[in-house]
Amino acid sequence: MSRKHHKEQEEIQEQETISAGAAETPAEETAAIPAATEADMDAEISARDAEIQKLREEVMRRAAEFENFRKQKEREAALSGTRMLENIVRELLPLIDDLKRLMSHIPAEMQAMAEAKPFIEGVELIHKNFMSLLERKGVKEIEAKGKMLDVNFHEAITQIDAPGAEPDTIVEEYQTGYTLGDRVIRHAKVIVAK
Image (tube, helix red, strand yellow):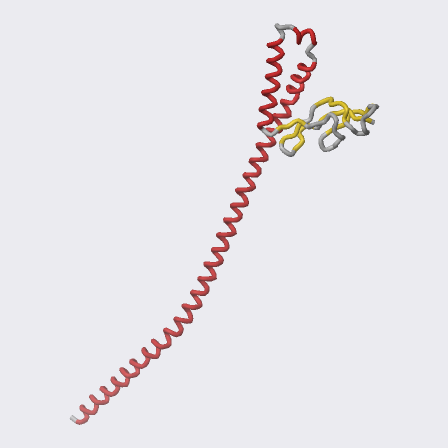
């Protein structure tokens, strides 16, 4: 029995050694795992923070690009509207010129006739309403007569001797010029003093 007992004790001791070793290993591993995991987690958190920052910057960049795109399209739309208005006004200017010529060439006898008065007033009213509409849209006549020639607004078609007038003074307006906002849509054609 002694041998059997001895063998049992050896087995018990062996099991205790294995158990003790097993008990120590998980404790060591548990102590090592949190340290390694904490360092890994810190590295992963830092990497994710960097990725989040990168994504935030990308979102901000895209938002800025979109805002710039939106503003550019608004400017293009406004410019397109202005160009369209400018083209329409250019097409209407000959009609306005015709109305002005008509009003300036009504014979004095006709102006004195009572029957012609409503016709003359009607033409003047049409011209006035036309000009009022254009002014509301930002169209203005360029002042010319009596002003000094300014090539930004005036086009000299000829020079004449004009006693008492300084050289390059506009003595007569041949065709009215117009601006739309800051843009000249038609230069005033003028006659200037020599």
